Image (cartoon, rainbow, N blue to C red; front, side):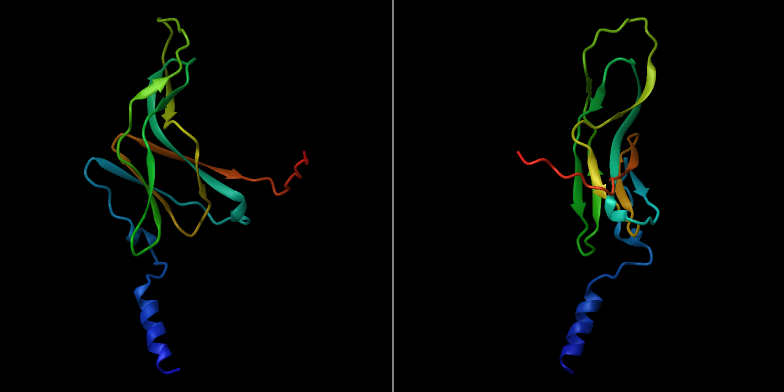
Length: 156
């Protein structure tokens, strides 16, 4: 037993505990980039919630077409900490649908996100969600909540 205690103590000291400030694990943004930090409040039933990340830019566009940007939001695990961070290295070109619009129609300001499936993350009030993007790119989020009642599927 006396030999086991030092081994357990050494192992415990080599694994970083959840720091008083978990932001210690996240490096500042590099030049030309911005770091966004999302902290969600503690809520009952956090397992029934998800955080959707929306990355994009606010631009002037027509109000009829749907627009999106190219690019890939990458998930990286910080070595030695086990925390995830999300990185967009480059915002690709903007594309959209091709509905005909009156050339004299006024443009509207609209948030245009990255293309692809929504990025839904686990809701965790104990750790921040940290996203690195090029300067000028915005990060937004919304919280989704599942219905506590699950509906049985029909057998077919």
